[in-house]
Length: 268
Image 1 (tube, rainbow, N blue to C red):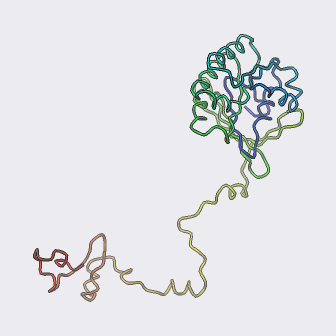
Image 2 (tube, rainbow, N blue to C red):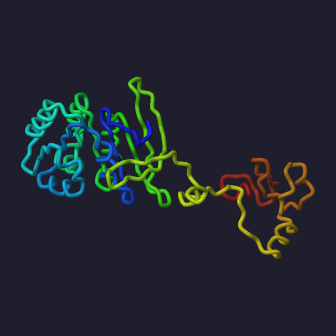
């Protein structure tokens, strides 16, 4: 489904980055919800209402604080389910993860998404990949946001009921009225180079004319000898070289082949 017409279903995760904020996208995705519940920390209601007045003035806020324990948090989730909203936006999930064990938060999100479409932002700076993967295990769609040049891009993975995953990449913008405009993202050459140029293993550094001439004409020892027979014409002292996986040598008078000096038995 295109991002501009995306409707939350099950659990939707937005993984934002330092240069591409996911909060606006999360609120844009629920702007059409007929009834919205926002689960957040006490005091954030005023901040969110100032930022997104068109949505928050008609939404219901359910809050937790530093004194909320596991049992009370479970009761909050149950109360949200009983209110049967069109969608639930879980704000400050990173605070929940810091306050409670990540597995408890994931379990509550799973319980919630079975009854109500849920959307939440998992900030890259606050939730590491290991903990984020726990959320991904129960998510229905995942949107990873990144800056590509001057554009914000969402790399989305949506899971169907049979487990099949659909992946898309779209660049998007969000208007003041939270309307999403998106289009398929095709990386430009400049962006590919910016993400990291691929170095060819055969690539050679630029050589000067003098260096190139030396490389072409300089004959290195034994580079043209690939067989043992070709070494027979070499001087005895020059036979101590590796050819075809073997070490070619000829014992001389110093190789007394006894136990008195093992290091001297084979003069390699």
